[in-house]
Length: 395
Ligand SMILES: *Cc1c(COP(=O)(O)O)cnc(C)c1O
Image (cartoon, rainbow, N blue to C red):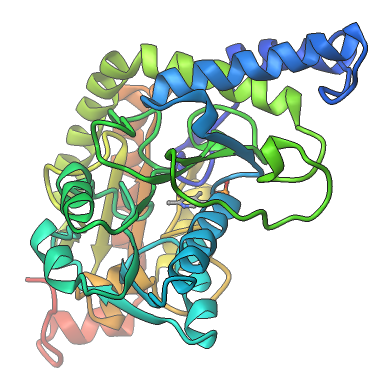
């Protein structure tokens, strides 16, 4: 099996597993205990926090452990909204192609009387700092723009957007789940106030993440209970996962340049090989994209059938985000970049990591070519296109 769905989740690295194992049978104390045995766990917890902070360019006190990207997004947005509302500010700016953890939280806030401006993301899948500047008002409580998109992989000009927000005094949150561990992210240098990350997107374990909230930024707990995480997140700390996350992050940051070069070269070859298929289009900017992300639309193809036949050929891929598969709605991300419905349905996302090989990339190219040709051969829609009965959308 060729695993090409690393944006959905990744294999847990050996380093992460090795860091976790002692927590199950040796350092298993509850960090809140007062005896020496618990203090060992407490020290491991705080050591992990400091190491993660170092990787992110922030202070350890700004790091709160959560259950992952979705929880961090929810908590950051709801906290900033509550802090804003207390000052009479009930306007939030975001983009049309955010992850549902952001979009659905914003929907909830709209029902509570907030006004949400969703910025357009252009055909290349990138938001400009100028768009953000133009949308900021006196009553803007928060700007939330993702660092890199999970479907089309486009990387946003986060540092410049952060600078605009800083200048106007508006808190800035970024969902950096797809970026952290893959491309350089630095909370201070990138002018970020709130940042979400999730360990399982960079070879850490699932169910653990971080919410960074810079000094002075409010954080309200979503979960009532104990005083863990300085009262910002109740519940016994998931120490094994936290140590696994710290190890995975350090490894990813250490090897970032080498990995990005290797994965980026495979991405280039994959794009080149797939672009030779007639009537297809690459989704997202050609250059400003994550090292491992390839996303194409093929005219006259149903994404679901494409995925099932690729699976038969031993290629694990996706048509968009894991959250949209299972529903028949086309991806909101592809609609946001202006792909018409019939084209958005025929999308394929392949996301590589450093464990993939150039030989696998060649096998993926062959498999996609065969499957696309096979599906088009059976499709009445394709016949009408070829016979000129209906015009091609993708030239
Ligand atoms: C995966 C993902 C999330 C959700 O993270 P979980 O840890 O799975 O909750 C949020 N945002 C983006 C961009 C993601 O890719």
